[in-house]
Length: 143
Image 1 (cartoon, one colour):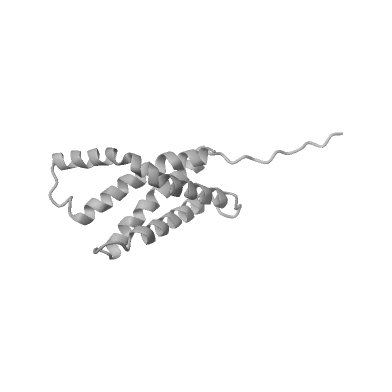
Image 2 (cartoon, rainbow, N blue to C red):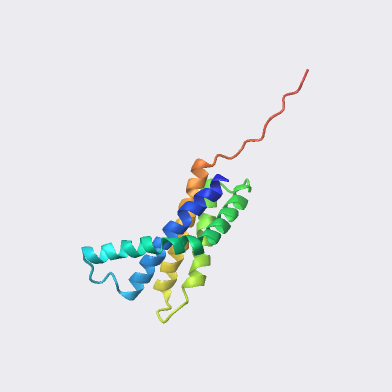
């Protein structure tokens, strides 16, 4: 249960932040920035945070389910699990968002792929760190 809470709390927030950054980067917003524009960026971030959770909660929970499935495979260690979940997150968001609009190219594909990679990797690592796997109980033989 902790794993799903970690993914649900962190994933949409980080994903929304990176999605807003990728969108503004593609439009040239960061070409001439000053303090006022950075403040506007964070105002838009916190105003759109509810939509990040609305549309990002289900994909974050799906990534948590994938992380849990991979967690039960004994041959895959924690680093391998983080890499697998991050790669799935990268590919899912890159193919979903990366080919849209007139600026379709490698840079846009990578930027939107990072929107899925970073939250999935961070959440998977935190789930490994704070969700200790349950060790099987050993039964003692009675004499």
